[in-house]
Length: 380
Ligand SMILES: Cc1cc2nc3c(=O)[nH]c(=O)nc-3n(C[C@H](O)[C@H](O)[C@H](O)COP(=O)(O)OP(=O)(O)OC[C@H]3O[C@@H](n4cnc5c(N)ncnc54)[C@H](O)[C@@H]3O)c2cc1C
Image 1: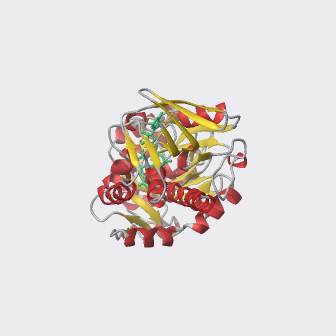
Image 2: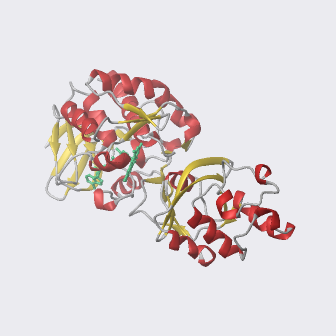
């Protein structure tokens, strides 16, 4: 079976590309029994689509590669496009746009638009080859041929939702380099010194994490494996083994409590269970603040810059995204076409572009799809 354009994967970037090519004959091949599995579970079931604060500074990857797509189809263009389809996302947490009630609202729009195309479910792509100018795509059930193949198969995160290494395998087959991949937007496991975190499992507290010059603020959730929560997930994007520094008292001033006769655990702006656990760990008593000796105060003040090395991350099974991927210097930043193989394109998470927490990864999936669609339309 021959199709002019074949898209591998039926997730965010694939569905946007298929939607933007209504007048082309496109085949979408998806491994799962349904489209957009990640869209459905994203953002706590409400899908954080994009962010009012948009720019290359919110991404890990080559800024010069990312910029043209983000500029051509930014958060405003995306919101306008969604509005035209009947979806008006809601602004939450000051800067983040979510679906009103459910991620289904976004998926319905993307599937409604892309249903004009041929969609094949329950077929896993296992290889792509090129013979005499034509790509040969083999799946678990069939073979297809095409002049243009778009790799929109995502990263390695959440294998339970269909993730596979096929995008990297195809890229490597055609001579592309892959920047080292790792789980990102994921929780951290801890070493022995921080095992006491596990006893606080389920408790959350506001923090600010300083990592490689980036400040990640928000909630930290203590977990039975270590720590998670938005601030931690955000920080994991920049983590490369080694120490991180957490300010457990981001909205607290030591000066304002100077000389206080109150118990320290009731002064600190964190849940009492957390302050008591830290005091115990530091070998300090819960006593009036003014009775602390200078040596004890020094220990106590480390709560504002608590530095330690996580043991690792919760891994791909829990990571929202995969950082690393197909090296962007081998892909044209306006069309998303491979510089090594004519007719081969890469979109979304499979590329070495990863956004921070807050809707940046869907925005990238959609912006890269837009660039590709614009190029394909222009070519045809
Ligand atoms: C739990 C969770 C929550 C998230 N929340 C958000 C959020 O709120 N905001 C945000 O911006 N980002 C969020 N993300 C990240 C976001 O979902 C991804 O970055 C985005 O979906 C990437 O789009 P993509 O098109 O590149 O890949 P995907 O959407 O992952 O699509 C890839 C598709 O390819 C299919 N596939 C894989 N291998 C094969 C194969 N061999 N053959 C055929 N098909 C195959 C997969 O089944 C999948 O459907 C979240 C991710 C997770 C896991």
